[in-house]
Length: 467
Image (tube, rainbow, N blue to C red):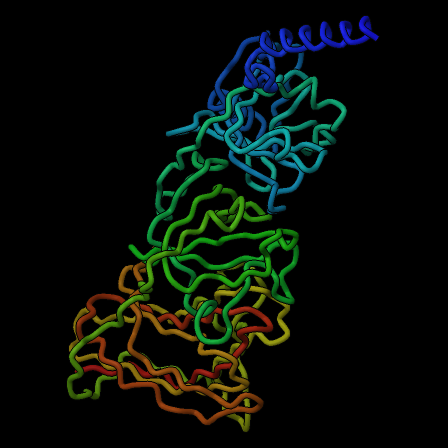
């Protein structure tokens, strides 16, 4: 019994000595995980240089040329500026050569998803170019593997041998620019646009559009964004697979942070968000253009321009100097309609199956260099009304492009029509143009999307008289 008690006492003393010599609690915390930087072996060249190589090839071989990298140790590095976390990008990452003030960017096609788990926003990566090809796909410099004459996705099993992740993750400073400064040199860069808003016809009243959840949005929802500085426009493109496609567009104005790219056809600049947080529309008031405010003088009797479309067919518009165009590249345009032997210019987006349209009907050039007290009149009929989506503008510096002209909105009251029938023809005017000089054109802009904004309009009896 004595021996047993002595043994217990000795065990107690040993335990106390052990506890008194224990290290502090912090010494048992899990050490920080440090991933050893993989060595980069090869010649690192700038993305800007690689794009220069491609342009040289295009100069020699034509616009469809591809640059093929063979037996090279060239490597490019860059910072990831895209993210597929919100599913607005798919099987691609965009990198640029600098985290601030970048000068070149490139798109990389990768046959894997998701990619944000490995290539986070701001992560620096290195890409071994050997075996890859660079070309222009949909207007965008794109890196991948060559299939036929097209750039295809890098197979997922090859990625670890081609792309090396750096330990560096840095903040990305967006490159501030403006719509009028868009050039191909800015493609694939993370940019910022200030003082912009969505076109009022797609965000006001009860017909506010979603980002990409309208019935006729196919693959992408396209929404018109305009500058509060000069009215220039571009398109915000959002995938119909994005997590935020069902959100409503903001009504006020603010800024955009995202990537400059091009449309599917590669013929127009588009901007793309990584996620909806890239839109900070926190300026409550809108910047819709002020209307032209000329003094309305007594109408004269000198007829400068007249058109009632009596002798017109739809095909005659272009032949007789009118411009009839859809700037969003759809098929919807104005046409000549007729009812009870009365002809007029007609437009409706109903059943067009176009999720977005901006259609212009622009008069031939009208000389006002020697006249005074000019007054515009025309008749307008609205029907099947689901939104006031027609506007009238004037310009005196039109050359050959709608986007480069300065358009001034006219103070024209657009009539509202019934929901399920036609209204009456109502005179729109008189509207004074007496403070505009030289050669002018008048533009009728129709902006909406099927089926949300498809009001039908008929335009007739356009006259411009002067003293």
